[in-house]
Length: 284
Image (tube, rainbow, N blue to C red; front, side, top):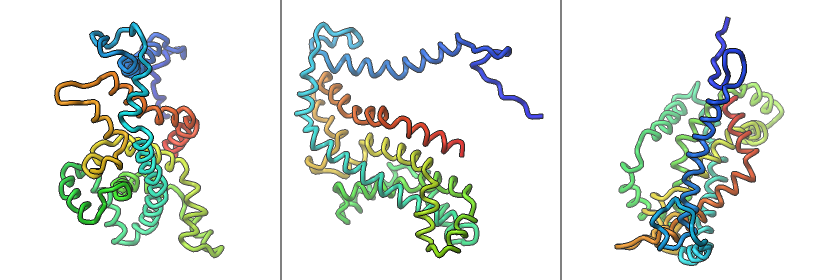
């Protein structure tokens, strides 16, 4: 007989353990809302009110947001970040899932594809700092130190983790579905596009979330690859508020809120699909 898993949120008699539930919910809310509250309080204050960063401001300086918008050239930096992130998501989902499909179906009877799988996975254990300097030199040689180049690099660097996620999911799809489509005259690419690709929606959601968060929030790669000011991303534009002897904290935190606002809006409007995709992927 299987042993029932113990639920810490319920007592032995089946009733909900409200004290523990409320404590954990309060801790979670403090962890999430606390930093947002502090960021907002600093963003709407005048520099003279910085003595207590957690206190309620005596007056709200909403002009900090418009000043931060102008100083960072927000529309241009947002466009650059959006282009990099959007193109990365589209090509990552298609190319990485296609590569994982080929590897999954071939590696059981092909030494080449089996070695290719472990080659991709091994890249997960190589720190980016180790290859950073040689990569910068090579990127400059091949003219990849621009928006198109860094987008290509994001797709490549996401391949190891995404291959791991996709292959684990594709292995659970019966090969008989491929064979049935091939008997109907479908080519291998048609089998992938019309049969396998739609079935990967849960893991597509997981890969899309991870790729979006990584690309949108990344600071290091744009810093070392995007040298031209007009090609900089939103993250690099935060440098403008830090001088040699002082930092404009109110404008900086106002700018931080402007940077994370698109992420919050995307989550609010698409949370149904995001949560469903992650949950289905976990259950699968």
